[in-house]
Image (cartoon, rainbow, N blue to C red; front, side, top):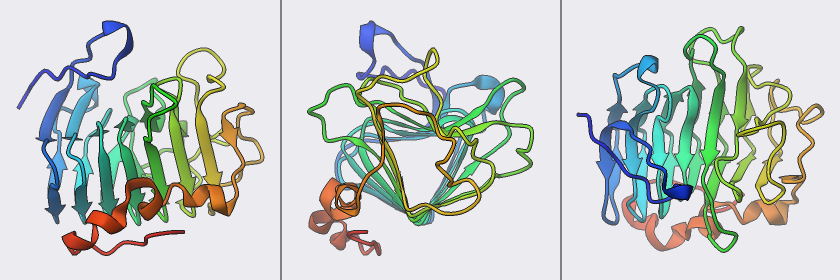
Length: 247
């Protein structure tokens, strides 16, 4: 199904048009063992497999499969556990407060001349409690990416917030780690952090030298866990989905 979606988050009254396969609204949506796939292919550029605006939405053992802009975690509180997420450019994006826990994040081969960026978080205001938290996940290539540059993400908006913690990163991750949205740097107002990750792509020695790329403590990392960040104790218990509340 091809549908035009106007994103309320876009600055300067711009409109982005997405082809998307599934959209979730309302409150308390739960998906288990489901597949969400957009078959438009890389040539269609922005083609969303799943968009969720639903507060307290949970996805367990699901597959979200597309190329550019695979998963639009649009707004509100969201939780993904043991899911497989495939994509190329900005394939986890939006301005929700979202935690990915024990998921497989699987960059794939993009169109010729493109590079992969896993996240593109869209926080526009310092007072918003939004961001992408990736915890205990595995980042590995889906296919041969030896000739493709793959980055952890790029800041879609001025207060873009993304934390990756205690996750395994394969050698596909570019040593710089992060890519600017435009130019050669990022706004100093972003908040990006990598905490206790491991694997050949996890070394921070040659990461970009941005003011907004932080070295955080366990106490700071704890703010991006299920209970602290999305108040999971209040609503995930009722879903029957297993989760880790803290670090």
